[in-house]
Length: 219
Image (cartoon, rainbow, N blue to C red; front, side, top):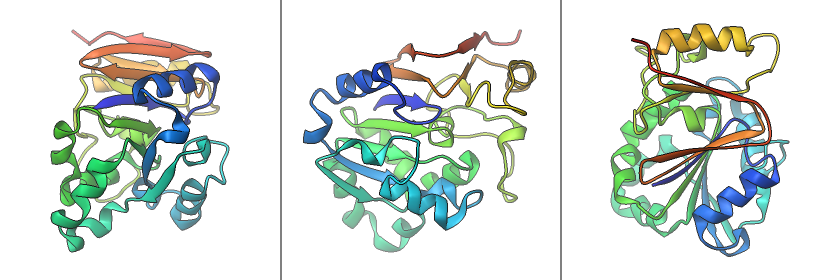
């Protein structure tokens, strides 16, 4: 997949331009699916509704897509892959809400979506916070809220971890990011809400109008 990993959505022109570049066409000509699943352990149904309807300051579903559908991962196992896999394959972009990355990881595996992702080379994945972190190897114990999570490991589809919302007091300070980076053992990035990371064919680029820092792997 083509990845746009954000801290807080498409917050500025640089991230917006990166998204259009990954799509290869205007947003108004692109079909989107949104995944609200990660919101439930933390934000609950109100957070999921705001994400789906675009009633949030985190720009994702309200960007003006040609079409927009909801892909609720907890429902997929009871539907059957013959029904929902075509929905995913027909989408140009998948918009993934924040919340708890370990819960999202669990349902990506249970639903079968995680296994489908490698067969979607032209689809764009736009993550918001946990929606980005779920593709990394580890999220760090401080970012685990789901009580049933066995540990802080996630899908590992990229080889770096992400510390989102850098600068958001009182917890997401650079000092705490440094401690987190030592825990996850890197490589890793701390990014603020004006920053995103793109990954295309293994090439990683930072798109930012804000603050970010890369942490090398611990030796």
